[in-house]
Length: 640
Ligand code: MIC
Ligand code: SF4
Image (cartoon, rainbow, N blue to C red; front, side, top):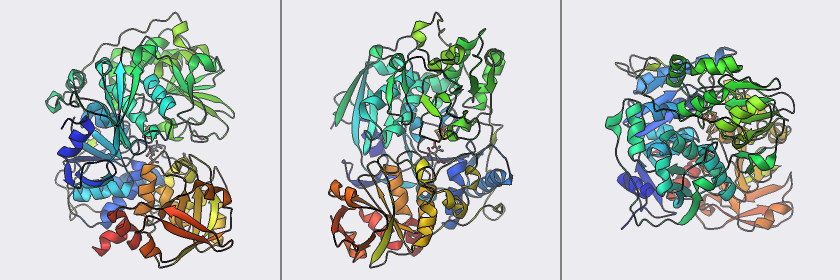
């Protein structure tokens, strides 16, 4: 039977289950990656699993998020991660080497392999033809321990590309257009597979920009074929031997098709405060800009930065603009130092900062009050930049660079600048930032545990009767940045859930933690796509710490739903969405006979105050039921 590329790779890795949409399967995981802001939890969990060596072909621990070492906490976390990585056979990438997804593409990604990462933008690897999936930290720890991952088989959308991009239009505009068409919920339960003759006009890093931001569609992952462009990219990184040609069968049938004519696209921007709030730069108009930031795992490749350098060369950053540039990797920065492009950026007035996530996660470089910041990043959620009232627009590197010069949002097609073709480069292998675990094991390498690292909270087995008080009624598209905000102030506490919990839902309702402390158990009511965005399991662990035992929402984002289940918190959806409107704060909701009910199609939740019954749906797989009964994944493993 003819197959999509996604299903071919999944089939090659199938351990159990039926490869059909909606079925639960277990697949072999070849590679994992972690980063530091989710990594401390991952390695605490790996230690708790009491395994000796990892079961994957390759696992890498990157340090890229918490690199502003304003106190001992981040540096302690880095040492902790390094020590556990060495004990179990995981490679460790030091801070300064670059952003995990860019580094993985350059150094380790292999077409046709599976990659599980404790970061929602792990699908960047789909640019190389991998099935690369973002997951909660516990799932990644399990994948290291057992070499497997279980998931519900997604459907596959084909995005059929034709034509070729015009000057000043680039990969970012492709994915912004797809986001405009499909929305931040459009990819939930789906893999986005790119096909069509337009694919070959996109380089691997262009493709990686597109698969990276597939996370913003809510998709399980996105994937491109592996072709001559893939070979060229791997060769440029000195890894041509890793090349494997891969494509869907010619007559593969997709569950849906979206046709995109690349030649019809224009420069786009995602307006505040959602990546799918997309319009053309021309329509938005020449708004004044106070900051421009080029970088992140979406758009900090060599070509992206070289294009920005070519636009800025010999010109001056506008007086009203602070231009900040964070290169994706040390190899890129080094190459640009070598070929002079770095001087072009600095001479134009750019602030070149460390190769790390930096401003993308609010680690410094917050914009001015009520400022307008143009960013080549992937998320513009309110407050994520560290400035609550800033307006963040997501744009391509070309649009960012030209706007930095003019000081207003600018459609480059109107300028007289011609962006030169960026010649392909070869990069010197450099693993001086990598710590190899050679010769290390559990008996000769101690765990380095700093004083800020606290144990993670554990739930208890599901009781027969679960009663909880409504402590929050939230709207649609609540992000995990809303649930557990992260910025330079809070990121140092990613290994300290008790401290973090004081800031849970800070951007939405500052009274939330106090309200939770007043009741024994709490329940959160959410709208649709609850928990979109980051993979941080802290968005489940902090509520768990505060006594949240179930969440009823109109729908859930994939990774957050799994994180809730891993923590033993029930994610339930309303069968009748009108029930959402009747719920207010302070209601006691009861699930009687909960241990049996979670196995049913419909789970009845009774409102003790009004006597009304709310019909909810769990749709839990067998494995999920086991986890929920045990009070979470760790408890389940301990009981096995
Ligand atoms: C993000 O871009 O939101 C992050 C920070 O990389 C997160 C991970 C985290 O919250 O630590 C993600 O995308 O998963
Ligand atoms: Fe880092 Fe931003 Fe990418 Fe998240 S989205 S991994 S914070 S660069």
